[in-house]
Image 1: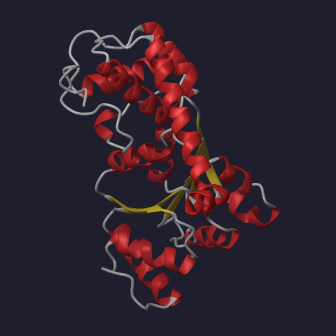
Image 2: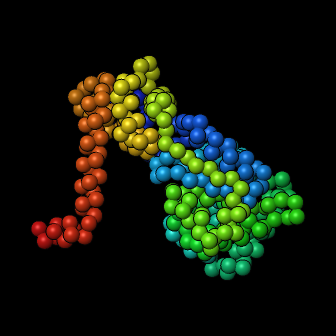
Amino acid sequence: MYLDFFGLKEPPFRLNPDLRFLYLSAGHEEALRAIVYGVDQREGLLSMVGEAGTGKTVMLRTAVEWLGPRTRVAFISNFQLNFDDLLQLILMELGVQKDKGGLSKVECLRRLRQFAEAQNAEGGNVVIMVDEAQYLGVEELENLRLLTNIETPARKLLQVVLSGQPELERKLVLPELKQLIDRIVQRCRIRPLKEAEVVAYIGRRLKVGGCEGQLPFTRDSMKVISALSDGIPRKINALCDKAMAEAYDIRSRIVTESLVEKAHESLQSGAEASETDSRPESRFAAEKN
């Protein structure tokens, strides 16, 4: 809607994890390097925690790129799967099997070990990255720990990266997960962006989107964005996109603080309306009408 008006070639604030728009704050880069190092060194178990929208999925996708083709990756976005389904999904992601079949757990584990051994023989590595790992149950987490027992006397043949929201961190102190906790070698935490990082983040996305010359956001408007978004990239994206749409509506090539605040109010109203509509009493009232 506003692309031509602002001289952009593509939307700069889409929510999908497009690595072309990657901005690495100091904290994000530290977490990324820790993951890549831990996988390369075959440390077995690693974890990464951050609030929703802080960029964990982007970090995992970037880690895949940094690790290169010699590391085979099963990227799992967990949707409360049991371990048997999780295991078959891992095999599908690795290309060991084409679709979910009727393989037994024993057979799945045998094939996974064979694959890991073959990769190791060729100088390769295998890593399972589980996004949204906070939804995993205690049994699933413990079984993933056991997968890291696939090893030779010299090295781990299979690495596991658990990525999730703070609920994952709270699970990783449970007494029944003590053996898993003791095995986690790298613990990364992604924190929200600071104000100066928010400014750099917005600039980066606009430049990749095709913006040339002066940015449409003023320094003061970006300061407001930093405060209203709590420095969380997903919120920054939503707020910037809506603010640029508000600016386009009044044909202003400058996104001011007042437009950012108006965009924030609109997003908040929309979120509240969605929450209200999802409540059982709201649906019942709508049906009666």
